[in-house]
Length: 341
Image (tube, rainbow, N blue to C red):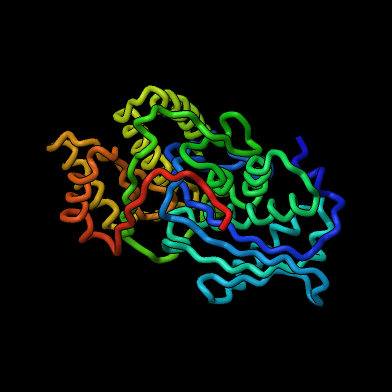
């Protein structure tokens, strides 16, 4: 399917749009790519509510030097601007984009580049703005979010999941775009407290980490494990089995970081306080039998996942026992997806 065919021969015109797009936390991780921005295994995520990026994009024509200007929290970011510019140039089926100058103003509600999927929220917010522009120029009326997911995936794999709310799959139905997943009603108000143990930028980017899977000794075994865990997690979400979902959360998180530790050029993104927090969470669950589980993306910061019905008890525990290990705690929950603003 060629999603970009309706947009290949457009004439650019001025346009301005703003989108708020959320981060997402992967329950089943994808780590390793094939082809052009395609996942080596399926992934499954929960879209967040309070961790989001808000992006305003101004598309200008007739500029002397077409390109991208980008401000993050009011500060010019040349590196991020070049990333967006490179992404736009990669869309070779739409050569007219080379005549467009983009002014991007963006802000996050959470630390950038620390493993809380700021690339997912940031690049999906931009891709939603770009999709809005393409639909404005072309008059196309259908498949807006699927097109946005397709375009987001070309910028950042995990970004394709952020264009939908709730629980989202990528690589289950299609490798080209993400799709919403139906879950038991008990999961629709799931809580996620993000324990930010470090707000420093990661020493190894996710792009570089994915690349190290290409000659990883355990890569194929990991892909088989992820496919099996994906099927188990989808079934547990449908059945309302939070214990099974929790077990998959932790298995997937630890498997992801095991791949980093056993890569040909080994590295770790974990911090001492990450490991200390995991020990405390396991002890708390053994002693109280309360359903608190953790997961990690490609970074040191823990997502603490639990049902809404246990919110008071678990947040009290987090405040007393875990917050001393953190720079901050961001209380979040399952969200409804991006909005135009």
